[in-house]
Image (cartoon, rainbow, N blue to C red; front, side, top):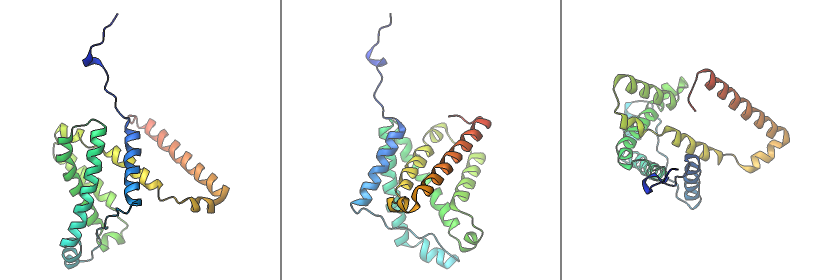
Length: 198
């Protein structure tokens, strides 16, 4: 017979998927009530445009406003998932700055002509840092990329307008269903072959 002590009692935690849904809906509700932040400009053609347009005080303020909003969402996610807040306060600004750097690099006109997206630069910067520098374990533990990807998917779902679904008709819905299922199955099969963790 085993006895349970108070230290062994499980603390109620919210699953990550529900935290993501809640945070995603919070962002949607804030947008619906009128909290829409100005979008910073990242496009530039030469050094003068880079300084006058992208690195201008007005544009940097827009970037800071977005940083503060995403930081609040990240901290709320950390609280709900019972993760240490202190590490988020160190890690998140560094990741955000690197993301802005990737967006600035991808905003160059010549780079856009090559169809190189910010994702490629983010991946390259991440690979460079991860392979050149030894990141502390607490830093790696605070990188909750999956959380932000899931929030992004919830927000992406809001771009599908119901009227567009009705315009597509039954054939469009069937086509969308086939595409989603086949892409999911292929990704699942590939992950199993590559022995990717759950």
